[in-house]
Length: 147
Image 1 (tube, one colour):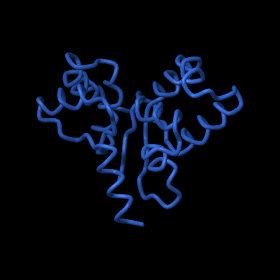
Image 2: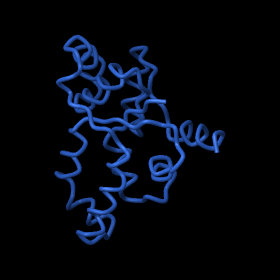
Image 3: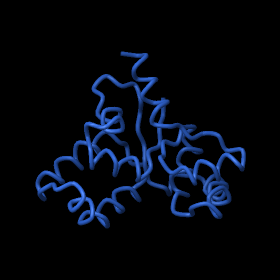
Image 4: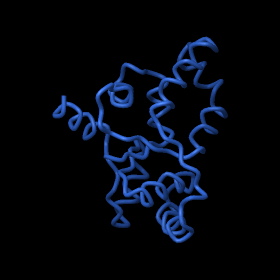
């Protein structure tokens, strides 16, 4: 199954790799294929000091955890997403959270589920009949059934 991960999911996994989110991403026998855009890497870089402060990681520990998490994700260049798909994603996110446009566009383009913990985003997308979001609990149940 294709899963587009957004920033809040990856931040959660970095802050606690033993959480459900961390275990889903790091699961060794998972058949889930994780995707994201380079925006995610940029956001990690921008918020590195805050992540370090919240986690208590040293620079080396943070680099190692970021590496472990991000190497489970395939990063897709948004230039590969057709303009009309990107425009559709923009119309879905414009009045909810425009910063999530790339993630929605990638999910739409890749025929994937969007894994986000952003309840406001999920509600906004659902109101517009876009029901391609998946919760942590749903993914955890999928993994539990397969192992």
